[in-house]
Image 1 (cartoon, one colour):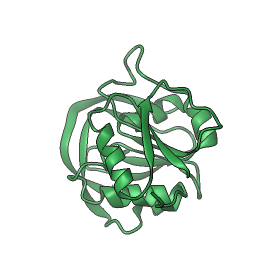
Image 2 (spheres, rainbow, N blue to C red):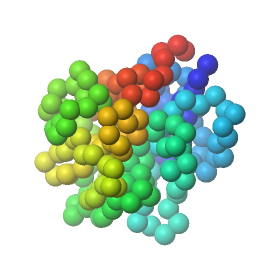
Image 3 (cartoon, rainbow, N blue to C red):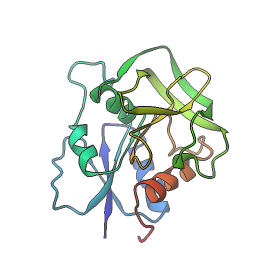
Image 4 (cartoon, rainbow, N blue to C red):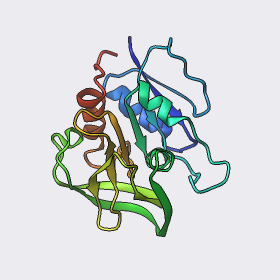
Length: 194
């Protein structure tokens, strides 16, 4: 059975990500971000958790994302998305104010991630940094009133690498479970067989 791996960067919500994934019928494991992942393991996809750290901090937690993206579909959540942008050639700056709470997500590009999700839906934000520039092959697919890059993918049609600045795992993101379902099954190709 193929498994999903969650790399934990210290978020208080990592266990909740795992719960949502398991509720969708996918077996997953949580490991510290610095765990060595070898090709013989039965992983099919990876989620990068949030973190209380900032990618702008010296010694921030990180992994070799390029190596992971070459082998697995990857979804970055909050810090995970910022790490993706930061490492792959984009830019992350301090927000002018910490964004915490409800926001309205707007789709700015048609994408399989939005299948069955209304164009304007409530999401939950909790971050003090914002992605201000994506890597060269990054495409903005979602925005909010205060954040120009709320959701993105790396690559064109058929891409499997995504990042979201908000938290789909919490109940305040009204279509968060649907978003996870879309990524797990429609994009990453996992099966609900657990």
